[in-house]
Structures are given as structure tokens and as C-alpha cells.
Length: 289
Image (cartoon, rainbow, N blue to C red; front, side, top):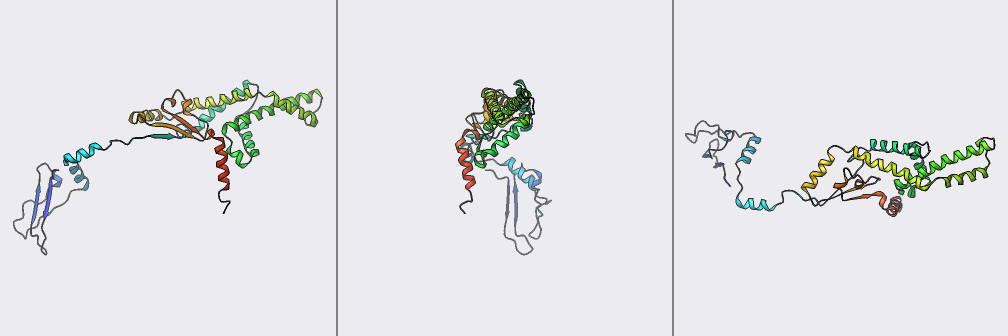
């Protein structure tokens, strides 16, 4: 290593400098040079040295430091960038905003329900889902997946509308009010309504909602997401990228955007038994004490 600046100071007697030596290379920038106009002529003379600002000193040292061969060889053995083995992402409100995505999916839901002859609103399904979880109880209800709840909510709302339709027909046939229909007739109408709702139709409606949820997520991706994923793949070609989510979204289904960059997706819905055990254990926390 070359030293461009060397200060050697001997011990000083009271009020007098015994010796002062300043040696510097010619390529040191002016801010590092002594402000003395001439060398001291005697021991009684004083040399006034004003240090430069720290930023200037650091810049000069950085510019003039030349590492030794040994230091260079050590640095060459160190990795320039850290290797990433596994990288996981959340999805909703992380790679895209969830509000407009759900809005688009709900619009398709209403349209699909209308195609099958049902006049329902998205909030009807939300409220039905709340009732389903409450009926299941605090542990089982909380452990139910979004898919389970939504499918059951769609079926119940469809059955409710079919029941209303059947009861209205019976009331008209009997020339009476719906409220006046007897219990046996109502029970028979409820059985008919349950049989009239096809599980295939229920799943078709749900699939339309879920499919639009993924399509809308692709349309609403934050603008820097794809370029960031591309950069990660370029810098770390062996990295495994996955999604970990408590929802239903899956980047592997977003074939026009995220799918090429993701290797797997883990969802809260993948392990029903694990969810149940988790909430059982959570409910027991503190009960022993």
C-alpha cells in the first residue's frame, strides 16, 4: 500500500514544539496540504495545520488507496452478491391492490347469477357466509376455507330464492298469502328448493367469480412487479420463488403475467385438518393457567 500522507510528531516541551515533520506525495490534493507558508526557522516557530473536511479526506483516501496483491486475492475469493435460495411473496395488496380485483370479480358474479335466473348481489353472499361461520361455531367456523364458505353461501342463497318462488306459486294456487301457508306445505317446498339447485351450477358460478379474480389481478398488477421478478431471475437463476397466502389467489393460474416466474403456491386452504387443529390449539392458549 502506498502512503501519500505521513505525519510524524515528536514529544513537545511546554509551549514549544521540539520537532515537526510533514511529508506528502505530489499527487495529494490541495485540501490535504499544510497551510504554513514556510518551514519553521527555529524551535520557537509554530506550524499551523488545519485539517480538511472529513468528506474531502475520505474522497482523497478512496481515490489514492491501492490495495496490496494479498488483499486483492482475498477480495476475489468473496462472492460479489449473495445467493438467494428461496423467495416467497404474499399476493393480495402486495403484488396488486385487492379492492378493484374483488370489484371486478363481484361484477362477473352478479352477471353469472343473472344468466342462471337468480337476482343476487355480492353482499348477499358475504352475509350468508357470515351466518355459515357462526352456525359452525368459533373453531370449525373460523377454520373453514374461503372456498367452502363461498360455495355453501351461493347454494343457500340460490335455495332461498327457489323457496320463495315455490311458496309464491303455492300461495297463488291456493288463493292465499305466503304467510298463511301451512308447515307441511312449507316443508315440502323447502325439500323441492334443495333438490332444484344443482351443485354443478353452484360450482360454475363460483368458478366464474374465481376466474375473474385472477384475470383482474393480472390487469391490476403494480407496474414494477414484472420487471422486478425478471431482475431477480437474472441475478439469481437458481432461486425458487413461491407465494404464501391465506386466500384463494394463485399466481400459477395467472398465465399471462406471474406464472412464468413462480415455482409454487402455498395456501391456507391447502390443509383443512391443519387449520382445525391450529384453531383448537389457539383456543386452548392460556386455559391451563
